[in-house]
Length: 387
Ligand SMILES: *Cc1c(COP(=O)(O)O)cnc(C)c1O
Image (cartoon, rainbow, N blue to C red):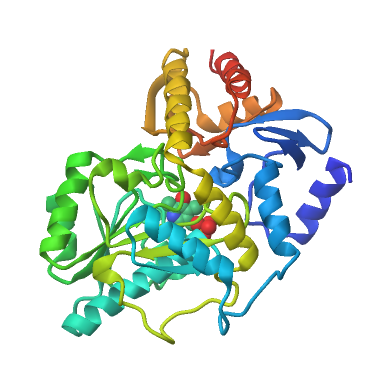
């Protein structure tokens, strides 16, 4: 199909939820993608931090195809090998005790929030159902996760919200005030993605973790975007010297197939029991086989390479005209610009580079397998546009 036809059908038949860039992506290899017009694009977005190994990765495809040749879906009434393999991998790599699988980041967070309320209810009864989330956070589009998203812009139209969610700034006084003795959990993104790629201060997260432990309030780390090697460690919280009670992840976990995972650490491991929660597609064997391939390849050696690439990109970006600050962590890069991020992203697209925005910042989250040539090509386009 020609782009004109694709965009016309999109306008006619799809719900109007997305403001899209004027390109249809049809294929590619690693971080070099092809548009329906045959034009090539360097990919600094990875489908919003999803395509960890870029497009058409041979090993990843082989893992997916192997599972497709066996069975494509198994109801959670039965056992399935890819699910247990992935859960074991995740627990062994993180120290988590149990995993619940779903299909998206929003669902992974929904599960975490429900589990936190149940944990508290079983131990303390009523009156302790409050969730504290941070201003500037993004946790998803379901009503509970939208409520937990600390940005008013997302809250228009959808009232009334889930009760007992309070917002705090990234400082302890503000968190304690918001908790008001009624909190069962505090939910954070160690690196806030959607609102501008902002890493939380290490001392705050350390203090928060300590306060949560003392007060038996669960600490939930939303690693939907920052997880799975993105920041140079398997999960970003590792760089904060803390052990959360619940970690949620999704985007990059299966390298491009839908999946969500809620990881329960020791304190929270028995929060959910039979019948409390579930998902028809959750733990889909093809997604889990893909995720096993992803997690088993995110070795210490691979992660060191990611750190090296991140350092390279950051050093280059720091020197560009029009860049006020380089933010974020590892290969989750934010750029504070002199120009409008939306305009810069549009200009980059025209010159063959895909970048994302995060409010007023540019968001750069390339495939972790991006080559030096691909980085250099993309960086030269960006340099040109920012000048
Ligand atoms: C993308 C994102 C979500 C929502 O994930 P979906 O898969 O779109 O439901 C939640 N939290 C964070 C931090 C995200 O970046």
